[in-house]
Image 1 (cartoon, rainbow, N blue to C red):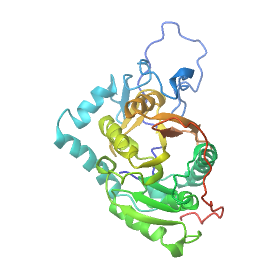
Image 2: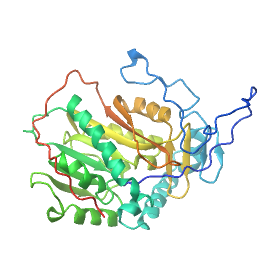
Image 3: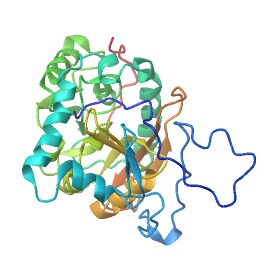
Image 4: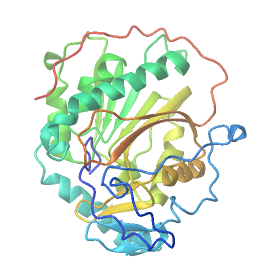
Amino acid sequence: MYHTRVHFVSPPLPKPKPNPNPNPNPSPSAHSPHSRYPRPQLPKSSGGRVPVNNPNHGMDAGGTDSDGREFKNAEEMWREEVGVADPSKKSNWYTEGVGYWQGVEATVDGVLGGYGQVNEPDIKGSEEFLNSLLAERFLDAGGGGNLVVLDCGSGIGRVTKNLLIRYFNEIDLLEPVSHFLDAARINLAPENLMVTEEHKAVNFYCVPLQEFTPDAQRYDVVWVQWCIGHLSDEDFISFFKRAKSGLKPGGFFVLKENVARQGFVLDKQDKSVTRSDLYFRQLFNQCGLHICKMKDQKGFPNGLFAVKMYALAPELPKKVYKSKSKRQVNRPGIIK
């Protein structure tokens, strides 16, 4: 359930409402699966926080599921999927999600939903984003340059091996699908890495996101990729509020996720939701998080959901700090 993977082919979009002033020459891409709405402009005074009074594309907008059913808003969808004050129904949602991924092979192609070819452009885009963040705002938190990251939804260790272990001294992996985590232990064994012994995977937590609480002030970065869609809105907010306590001073989150053009798209098969950009921003507000930086993923095939990277922090940075970490520039072999 929570691991590095991606939903690619967009499910059917909601049927468009009749246009009272139809355009005789509509754009052919207006309803293509990979097109998306422009993200809203943030007012300069908002400090990275987005106003939540726009109902057109956020959680108040309509959405659809992979069977083509339409919902008038996210509240209606979540009420049906996880219930209201119904622990058993919510438990079933998460159990079915994990159950889906327990039937997937522990390979790059498996965790990427059969689209293993996006592995390299994904890592390239993430590395460019991470480098810009380290240069602009990464803090040396007084740990002698010992940088620590939590890889949420780590799966088989794909992102850790190909990216994070070259920039961080210690990596903890969080993944509830046990055979994925077993594969990660093998992939990240010292003999299978091309980095110095100062860079290593330390802890392997077989725990779902909605149940995980980090050690206080352990992490410089919490990396969350292609897994947050499995959490209900309530658990999304609860997770980030708990995870904030695990950040060192100046630490931040990186969220990399599929983005719907508006509203949301529910995948009935693996129990996950693809949210729109504004939907995410509304949730960030409720988490008490600021957007420090954003970037669109490039280089993916047509026909896939758009993917965005968000750098999020509890507070806006007041100044840039230099890190004492020695970054490894050698590139390990891609996991086959």
